[in-house]
Amino acid sequence: MKGNTTIISTLNGLLAFELAAMDQYFVHSEMYADWGLTKLHERIAHEFEDEKGHAKKLIERILFLEGVPDMVTRDGLSIGSDVPSMLQSDLNVEYAVANGLKNAIKLCETEKDYVTREILEILLDDTERDHAYWLEQQLGLIDRIGLQNYLQSQM
Image (cartoon, rainbow, N blue to C red; front, side, top):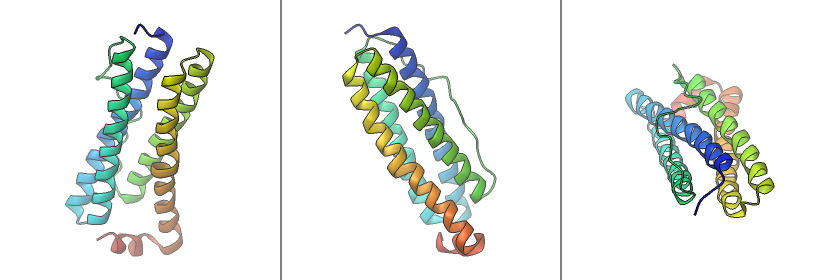
């Protein structure tokens, strides 16, 4: 089905964010594993899998609309150097993804592409309620109980 070129381009922009988030989560999860922070490693490895699933949904939709997925571009990739900066970098990517999804949903509404809109709404719900919220909780815990206590709880 020949899709709207603006929507395909927008989906590729979202794909760039998802691929960056996927790469960033992958590197961060391996850093946590190397540092012995197994709970963080397991959770962030799960986030990597979620981002891979998001990217897959976007790729499937782009292909359905007869577009070409851009697998080269990465937006927002920022590898942290310690736990707080890693969590904050991941949260920043999630905020950027959420903002991009909201803009894309508006575009889909304008262009009457309700199926794409529905797919993006599911991704937005996951991004806001699962990914961003969990990261906000972790940063809040660090503020409340201190970094050393937080790190000890993640071993």
